Image (cartoon, rainbow, N blue to C red; front, side):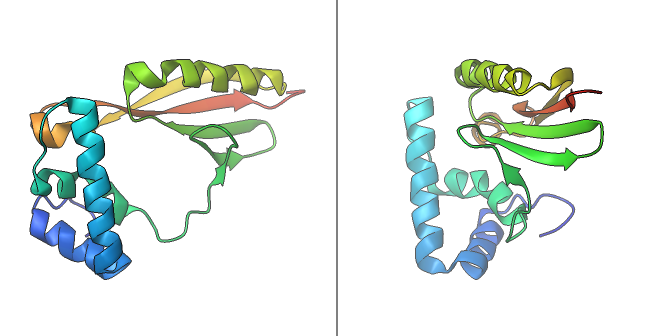
Length: 148
């Protein structure tokens, strides 16, 4: 499942089973379904829940990213002068306060935020509201290291 996104729930399910095992795949599908129903306030089909997990199968088995404690952010580049973080969000409005706290923490550590770039694309709700619906999936945050 590389390159183009596979929109067939059965193909996504088979890949999930292959990577995670049947029991773990079923668990993830049920968690995704419950989470979507809680957020959206209506019943979500098994097929739509499976499609929300497409990102799960596109992730490499091992993540080499350094995760920042207490924040859904990953250090993607740590150079001589610059750092690049990726801050993942699930709910744009709901995650803004946590994102603000993350920015405060970065500044408290002596880094200066130079740019914030939104990552716009398919979000979990896109599978329910249609593929024309896109939202903010996260942000790239580019900072200058202290003393630069």
